[in-house]
Length: 240
Length: 246
Image (cartoon, rainbow over all chains, first blue to last red; front, top):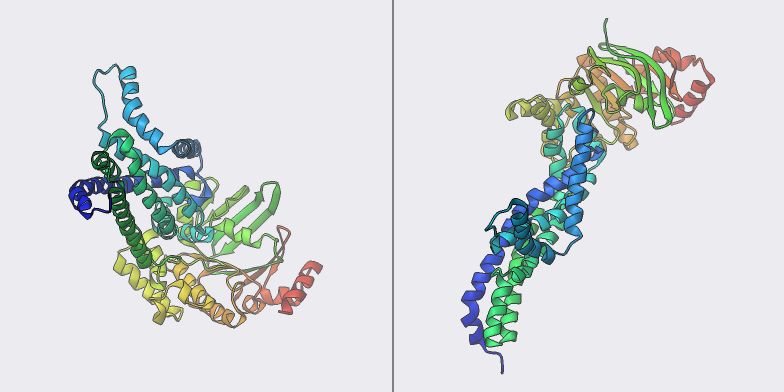
């Protein structure tokens, strides 16, 4: 059984369909994960000097609550395997909803479960990236902004944000690539992404070499596109 | 003359350590007050309290009619009227010189982009850096950065400017250009200034009043020339002996 190039051409349409799905899940995961990550990352340092002045009065307990919620989210996600998260959301969560709300038919589509899982998973790691970058911003720059009389919101958007974002790009690149590869784990809930497509073709023709080689190359192409996009942004923004 | 800054019995502590003890001070409009003192004497803390970068622990602070701690919500208004120049310049690294100066007018004063840019261009010209408007801070020398920082503080048209050791981080040959700019601001615009510095030449030429602080207290104050000629305390005599050798 030598290397049969025709095996690759025959399986290409199915593999490309899988790659497309992988790509879609990843992009949704990155966009949603960024939103989650920025919220939770800022949430974990709400009310600390990293975001300007410490709050007074009723805002103080509010920021404590926000910090607890954000930290709880990050630690829960980081502390459990993504496969378990996907299984829980796809199999266990609907049972929980049925039991608690007494609903007859409640289920989550596999694809929906995959997208939600990757969003929340990436979000937790991105939160730490955001937090790290924000606390690395020189306190003198915050004081310079505050001494001009701008609001906290303006301080975050116009001073902390741009400076921190530049520093976030290299670790974000890492996380985006990890998230893309993590989508392969959704094979366990039956999402027809690239790895599952490969697995199914392999199961019918037993051509492991050709199939897994093609699958690997397809992942490599997608991660390369991600990495190059990040490099492009990095160069355009001139990191400080 | 009316006082624009008033400190009444102000104390400031960090944890258990009290760095300002019962400070009484009033600064008149248009006055240039120079604060000197050894490191750890509380002089930086004093001016950082004036624009509320540090909140006073007790006593009362009145800036441009706003009372702290009673009107804590108006801290931003105080800052709009009280600009600050830092030892480490603290220019925004992601913005050009022009955008650094235009930042305050457009964000804090909410002016249109074009109006803010006009103000910024004028001020950069005033500090002699019109040709550098598109340079980023890391492309400028320390002296140039500090002049941009002065222009940035001036751009929101404050009533008071605070200087926190503005020349201490500079190479010796760049100190003069920054002091010249400060002197011009004091003379041309009659700006109220509180300057923490070790530059005794600047103190005697530009200062209306010299304040000597030690261990959180105002030990001596008066006309700069007189205080320097006839220091009343041994502590000041010793301090002046140290700074004169530089």
